[in-house]
Structure formats: structure tokens, C-alpha cells
Image (cartoon, rainbow, N blue to C red; front, side, top):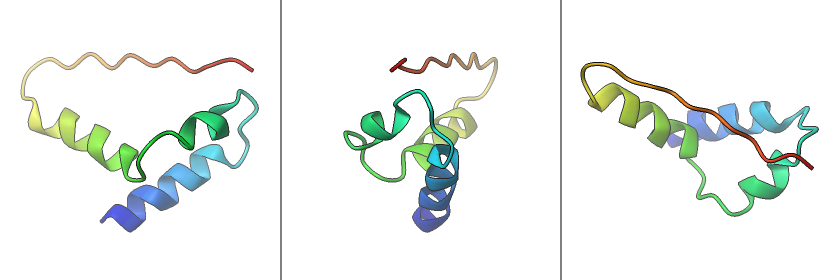
Length: 55
């Protein structure tokens, strides 16, 4: 399953223009899977906040 997460992470960065590729280097592979599991495992209302560094 982690392999799928890494494929998604790679696709997300293919057209990165905001420096996300630099941030990814400090993250452990599988971060998309872990984020999805957190959402799945917490029942009730979920607030998803996003923010990206700007180059």
C-alpha cells in the first residue's frame, strides 16, 4: 500500500512550481497514506486545512 502512496506523492510533485519538491525531501515516504489514514480513523467532523510553502 505504501507503494501506491509513493506513486501519488510523485504525481503530486510532477508539476510543482511552489517548492514542494524541496519540502518532500524532509518527509518520510508514505505521507499521503498516513494523512488518509488519519482522516479515515477519526470519525465525525473532519476539517482539512492545506497550506504550501511558496518559493
